[in-house]
Amino acid sequence: MPATTDLEHLGLDAGGHLLVDRTLAALAPGDRLTVQGSSPALKVHLAAWCRSQGHGFEDGDPPVVRKGEALTQRWAGAERAGSPAGPPMALADARWGLAARGALVEAGGPPLRLPLVERDHVWADVAPQLYAAAAAAQWDPATAVRWDAGTEAPADVEAAVVQLMTYLVENEQAALVIPARLLTRVHPHFREVVQLLAVQAADEARHVEVFSRRAVLHGDTIGTSGAGGRASLQTLLDEPDFTLAGFLLSVLGEGTFLDLLRFIHTHAPDVVTADVTRLALQDEARHVAFGVAHTTHAARTDPAFLAHLRSAIERRHSALLDTAGLNAEVYDSLVLLAAGSWEPAALARGWQAVQQLQYAMDQGRQRRLQHIGFPADEAAELSALHSRNFM
Image (tube, rainbow, N blue to C red):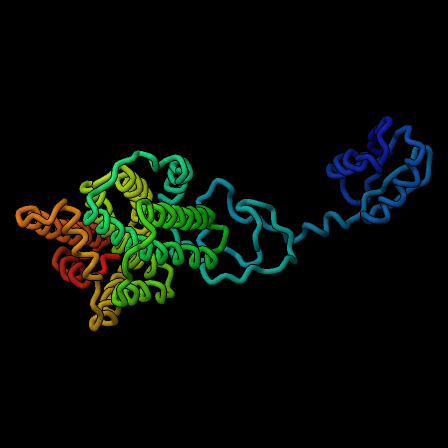
């Protein structure tokens, strides 16, 4: 006895085919389905629909649909793109294309040709948690900073702040370009990594905005850009490998910037400078956390990878040997910021504070390198080779 579905007053041209399709899904090819309904055009529309879907049509009263094999054949060879809840598969198949993780993927679609399809080349187990934290911690530059606080630093200290903001903008622009470039190379099956990189780029875009706005808050002239600093950043842009680029940028560069931003925040002469560095600091901490977690994952998956990390540091150090490194105006601005005035005693305190800053930067890099897997003595040696430009 054939199965039956009753469309009542619903015509096939108004969605009735959904009920027919739903009933046919439970039948085998060749099975018959009686279609009842009062729509005047039911037979005409049902006959045409059957032809388009590869089903047989029997012009009775009521009409009957004989299920064809087209639907079954369409999904022959289909496979699941992993599990929606994760963890992601070790290897993302190019044939999955842009399908959602866990989707049943019909065969025959265009392959997605991306270079980063192996989980261990991009992954860190903490990536989902870091993305959730990043999404929840987004802030609005227009309202999160107290732009109208009204405080203003002495003219010389203000000039130092302007120079530091100019320097920060330059470095953050490099930190924006790199994750934006890397995310276009990662298979979307590793969606949490792609999402993290996208948020990281958005974070840096906000940092560029607030540092730029702070630089011209009390004037229309910004600071200088040294060739050595730009050369240092260029070596980051030139690193093609995903893990090495993230290691140099986030583990070493942004990790060092955590101490720098904390320093500027501590010695900020006004509310706006304190706000923009505090907000950037909380974002950068997430970037560093993912960089450390992924690099550690890569090194523990393949202990020989530590040699590649070492080579990346040495290669960058060699490329920058003949450059000035940190813009002298930036260093002097840090001293004056911490000093707060040109009084000799104050400058001595400022100078000492910057020495302590550089020591803290070095100790932080060593801790992260040891966490990744380097012995303490090698971590100290490699930290000393880090760019004088801090990033």
